[in-house]
Image 1 (cartoon, rainbow, N blue to C red):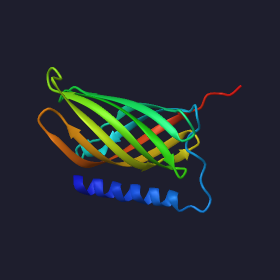
Image 2 (image 1 turned 135 degrees about the horizontal axis):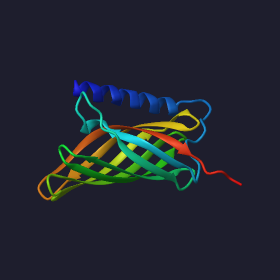
Image 3 (image 1 turned 30 degrees about the vertical axis):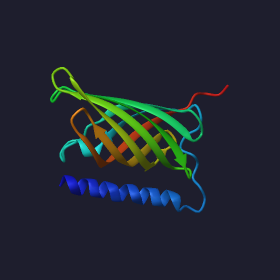
Image 4 (image 1 turned 60 degrees about the vertical axis):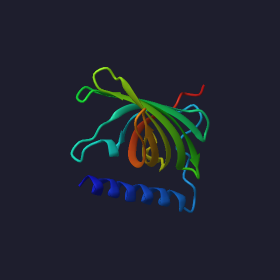
Length: 167
C-alpha cells in the first residue's frame, strides 16, 4: 500500500511537470521578488500509509527566479525534531530545481543528530492567485556517525502567497 501511494504520487508529479513544460504559451511565474509564502509541507516517504505528517514552512522570493525557505517539525512520540532549509530556482516558468539540507534528532536527549542533503525537482502550480501547490521528487543523502544512505523521496507543499503592497 505504501509503495503504491508513492508510485501514484510520482506519476502525478511527472504528469504535472511535463504539462507545465509542454504548454504553448508560458504560464505566469509562480512568484515575484519580495513575495512571502507561509504553508505546510509533507515528506510522503517519512509517514505511514494511513497518516500524513505536516510541518509548517515559510519562504521568501529573493528574486523572480530564486526562493529560500525553512521548516521545522517536532513529534512527541517518538520524540523527533527536524530543522530543514533550502533554495529553489525556477526553470521554465513553473518547473523548479532545488537544494535543501536538514538536521534531525531522535530519542530522549536528541543525542545523535542525522544530516540530510537533497536535490529536488518539482513544479509550482498556482491553484488560485494566493495559493500554490508544489509536488516534488528528491534524491536524498542521509547520514550520521554510523550510517550513510541514499534514497528517493516524494513530497508536497501547500503555501499561501503574501505579496507586500507597493506604494
